[in-house]
Image (cartoon, rainbow, N blue to C red; front, side, top):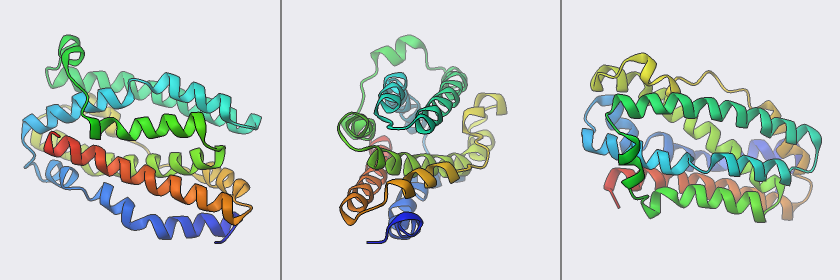
Length: 216
């Protein structure tokens, strides 16, 4: 297996089919086309709430796990951005008529929280390289999903732009993440661990949308 920057390129090539499984999921396609039932959209909103509710603890664990100051600072910066997303997401929930009481009463679907459970496992039990490889895949797949559904939510579901602003994600700059991964990619053993983490992260992301779509 390649190392350094070559590993990053290899990782992208070999995970592309899994990435497409997320970004081209039928859930994403149906929102873009306006054919997703409103009931399923409401389920998505509730399950996304369960997905992100532990975000503060997750990033705290990432900061503690990070071996270097520059990586710690990077996670703190990303955490700040994600907290901003939570504020925007509340507008989305309100626009759909989902109250705090409804969220409290809703139950997470096992398939929908498998992804976040895996992320906590990486932040608490794996290496920093594994965690960063997963973070890169999750961030890129989510950004592309948001890009594909942002206009559909407004056009087909009559949601004002300010209520879906959380899905209006600017172009990503992932050079720092790639640099971190390349730094860790020094041996075949380490690279294999990171490769597996990236694959599993995308698999669990797809599972999230499977669960939202089917309600199981």
